[in-house]
Image (cartoon, rainbow, N blue to C red):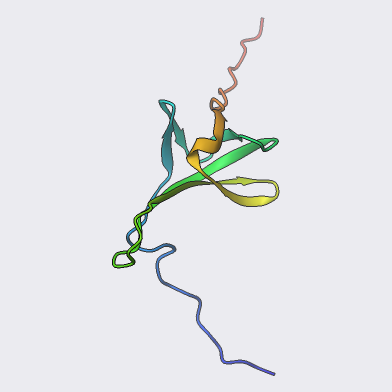
Length: 101
């Protein structure tokens, strides 16, 4: 059985009233995309992807603003509340070239 050919969705990846950024401030440290984090109650390091703030949809009558960070690890993408971040690892230092002698 062949279905009707459909085009891939070309709209925005998230609703226009959401705020999605690739940086986030945690305890005075700015976390940028690609930086490693430790999450409370989870083993291993996670790589920061983005920070999302989602106020209620206009006209919905809801009052709660939701906020989360998206991270990635070997198993895939995960979302956590910002208060679950336990530690921000410093970015790796570049290797210095040693002079012979």
